Image 1 (cartoon, one colour):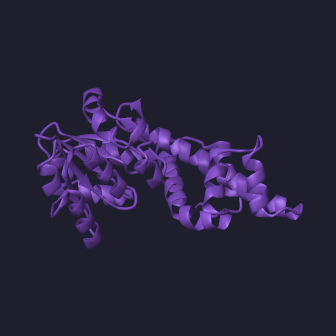
Image 2: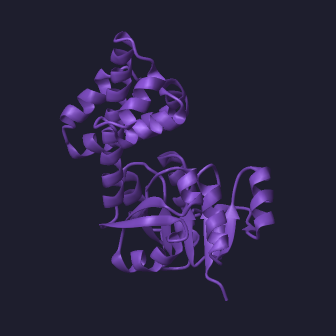
Image 3: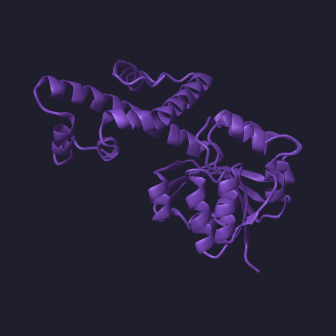
Length: 269
């Protein structure tokens, strides 16, 4: 009998994860809000459930891919949430990039029976489809060991970071670095245009020179800073806000990272 993977949140990122899990031979039970997504994953061979709790009740491993802390609290928390609905000791992986305080609060709930792991990701839907999504994973070592083969359906590399919350800490630092780099590139493009070169020309040149970076590659593939801002802006602002919240909770001064984020032309908070 196949291991059953419960999945909540089959959106832009979650949908290709479900496909990869099915292709890897897992029995996948999915809860999705949109009718068209439910019909699509059913056509792939997934079983569609009526609620997150129904998904969790039948699963050996449950994965959630939700947008925000608010959604995570709604779906995982409380007496009717995923963490309470799973069988005792069942791993529950959260791919949400949110705050450490939220996952530690959920894990500490007295009604929770599942073992929560924070598993924020770096990459896009195209990386998931190719099986090369970077997944950071924090939580108890035995639970990490149990979920690693499942996540390997779309995760490469899978980086173990330590106890619960450490994966989010790493991801939030990463996102601040990415946001700062994006601001520097937006400022550089403005300077380049003042010097007489177009945005596309400068992006192409920088991508071949020592000024290249991962952020530059993302902006270049997006077609320039305007389209990058439209598509990635809401996610960047959410991630920057989460990092600022975590830093405030811990009394950490973000220093030059925050200065770079605030000094550039992009509106990131």
